[in-house]
Amino acid sequence: MQSLIIFASGRGSNAQAIIDYFNNDSGVEVALIVSNKKDAGVLQIAADNNIPSLVVDKQSFNNSSFADTLKGYTPSLIVLAGFLWKVPDAVVKAFSGKIINIHPALLPSYGGKGMYGHHVHEAVIAAKEQESGITIHYVDEVYDNGGIILQARCTVSAEDSPDSLAQRIHKLEHFFFPRTIEYMLESK
Ligand code: GRF
Image 1 (cartoon, rainbow, N blue to C red):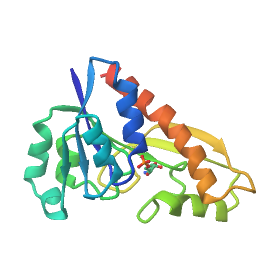
Image 2 (image 1 turned 90 degrees about the vertical axis):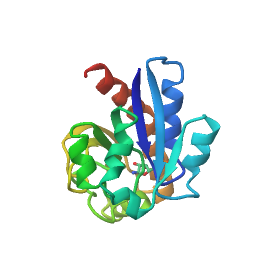
Image 3 (image 1 turned 45 degrees about the vertical axis):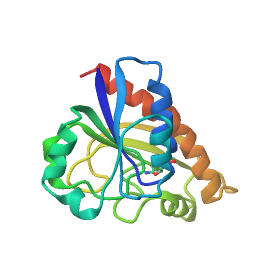
Image 4 (image 1 turned 30 degrees about the vertical axis):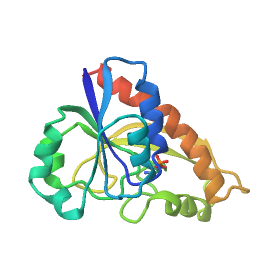
């Protein structure tokens, strides 16, 4: 059995897509969902799917024992799906090459601190870009910096709003994120 741990701060549509994708795969389970927000939609998704969840505050998240808590779940991958805190260096070191993130733009453009959610799509539209997309990448000690695993592109039209672009990006995410995870698990 290969285990995944998902970190998420928001509504959790990517977490849902990952759970659904592996639902009929007896070899992969989502063992834990971690959130930094006690009212995040992703926690309801965890409850609905009988997946253990953990709400962390800054202190416990940054405590050196947090990596040990995660080790207890022996994850093959830790998946950041809309998680807004920087992962502590101790966790990055403990799970080197095993933490991945999804970013709703084509890195290295539109990444870095403060570039999340609607801020990303607003910046892409303000710059009159004709395409955007998603980037799935390894997590290292620097925001949005680790090696790129997969990028997928979509068009941006002059009529797009941050909302309509976000919807198009979510479609890409929901298709490619579970499949990229599956590919990574199979190539280990
Ligand atoms: C996604 O667009 C992801 O790329 C970004 O945050 C969003 C999370 O959406 N990092 P959801 O909570 O999975 O619906």
